[in-house]
Image (cartoon, rainbow, N blue to C red; front, side, top):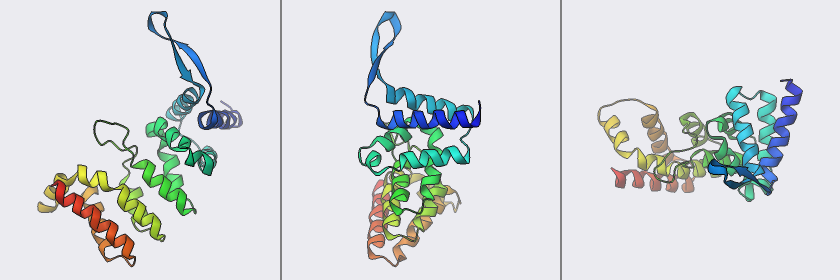
Length: 206
């Protein structure tokens, strides 16, 4: 596909996925018809496109621009689309986490740590590098949001972390845990409080 045409298609699907409220009937088994939204269809198209070929820098920038719209974020449309994209949301979340806007960095880490399964903790993007980066963010509110977003992950992996610490095993979770411990010495009292809260959750879950 021509790169310009592909980018144009992405822009169209982004707008539909983020803004459309219309539905159509899709034929299912036994000749039955089920309502399906154009927004969901557009999200599926984007997911399929990015799965077949990773988005380019220009395409990621296009996605970030559309998803960063304050109204779309406040309505939950941006988060919903990222959840629908699943694994294909990763380069977009990475770009949001590197935004110059602290609110977008917060949005990125909170969305990344949203569980995609209601039955058990299964975060959209368990990218430890993202959390490690934002735990050291210069913005106090970003550090707090990152710590609190990690609460379910720390609780879910509490025994694994304890076992790794006891056996002196270094892994992603123990590195993250040590960075969380370091926040107890943060210059911000609010950050120190948030870190203590999550560590208490870890202690309780062991």
